Structure formats: C-alpha cells, structure tokens
Amino acid sequence: MLRRLYDWTMAIAAHPRATWGLAGVSFAESSFFPIPPDVVLIPMVLAERAKWIAYALICTAASVIGGFAGYAIGALLFEQVAQPILEFYGYAGKFESFAERYNQWGAWIVLVAGLTPFPYKVITIASGATGLGLPVFALASVVARGLRFFIVAGLLYRYGPPIRSFIEKRLGLLFTVFVILLLGGFVVARYLV
Image 1 (cartoon, rainbow, N blue to C red):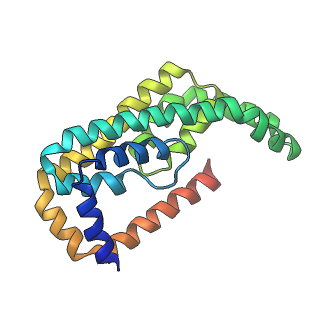
Image 2: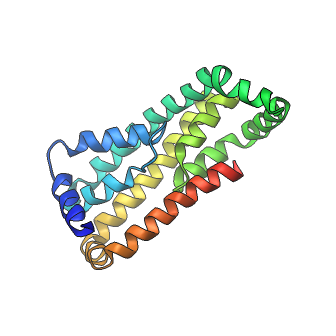
C-alpha cells in the first residue's frame, strides 16, 4: 500500500496544478496544519528536477504568508482563547515573563525553528501572542524558510536520481523515521515550549 501511495504521489507531483497544492500545504503548515510541506516538495522536485527553484520559491513565499496568518492567530485570538486558560491555571504572570524572554531571543527562535522540522506553526502563533516585532518576525521567517526549502530542493536537484533510488528502496523505513520525527516535533512543542 505504501508503494502505491508513493507512486500516486509521484504522479500527482508532476501534474500542472501540483504547485497550488504545494502552496496550500506550505501556507497551512505555517499556521495550523500538522503536515510539513516537505511531503509535497520532495516528490515534486524528484518528479521535475529542473523546476527546483520555482518549487522552493513557491514553498517559501506560501510558508511566510502562512506564517503571518499564524502570527495573526496568536495576536488576535490570544486574549479570547489562551488568556482565560492561563488565568484559570495561574500562569498569566509567567506568560509575561515568557513573552519578555521570547521577544529578547525571538529572531533566533524564529530562525532556528524555521530551519528545522520543529512545527513552525508553534513559533508563528507564539510570535503573535508575545508581540514579537513584525519586521523581525518577517525577516527571520523569510531567511529561515527560504534557506530550508532551497537547501532541500537544491540537494534533491543535485542528487535527485540517487536519492530517489534510496527512497524507493527504503520507503518503509523512511516513512517510519518521518512519522517518528513528526511526532517527536509535537512532543517537543508540547513539553518544551
């Protein structure tokens, strides 16, 4: 079944409208969706390696725009949703301290999290909730997401056939590792942030 899903994904990745799916997933992942855009970006670059720059640009732009949506969620819905919960549990004062520390290191937090598999939506929402400066957030997001997606797409462009062969031979193992990393990112987000 995993092989059929992989073959189907590779076929869809070469479809002319696949870029809209890439943009949609990239946007949604930065604000609320749990699946990273790499799931769409990787097969698209492997299917059409010559378009790696365009795919990386689409992924970056949509991710940054989605990051602004996540920022807005944190900024606009914090008082209605999170604040009452923090007050109920007696953490409202601690959040103010967290916000100060977060904003002190905010550019680095956004940069590092934007480069890693860590759920980026957590950072975008936290940036809005703590009031991280929008120019700082925007610049760090563009740099981090751009680096991440251009590195991934560039490596796939450069080493495409061997990587594709590696993926196809070890599809089950790679899927398992991906799921573990994805779940690990949520665990880190839940207990360490």
